[in-house]
Length: 239
Image (cartoon, rainbow, N blue to C red; front, side):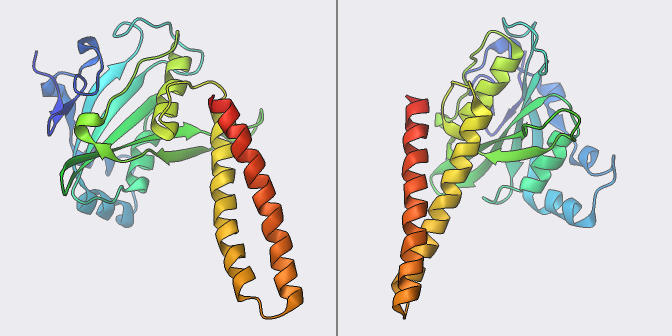
């Protein structure tokens, strides 16, 4: 069987079993299928047109194609190649495609870089919510990497664990998906604190009065203390 591929990226090149590969005849999806039902805004339609070259289903992970049990929440994961015309990942396009399916979806966006093909993985993951509240999602982009260094590892005894592991691989470059939502929240807080630290460092250096200097310094010390504690907690969790 000839399997679906985009510029050489396929289920097999990603390290996935042949049983997961989508046949070539069924792999490529027409872009118009994502812009006509449901109708999309003219801005999003333009992003599809200017950013996306091809959309190709590469692999389907579910009980029957891999030796795992069904999950309570996740029943299958689709691996999608999104061929791009530019290096910029169109996040709204990925959000729209992922929202059209209830199953998990791992995107492998692919563009031509200066030294060859570059892949940027992405996932859209539900955020933790309280019972009775509307479920919200967040799109996470992974680290860009050469196509020949892009792979996915199957880890976990059931589809829920597998989905968490795939999300961890995309977001944290780790296969361990345990307590992932909390780990992602910590990383997001660390990124925010680093931004605040840079701003406060500038404010401190530009302060023209002793009071302003002391105020900025006090805020800076508070941010650095929280950043140090969170970084230590995050390192302990990863170890």
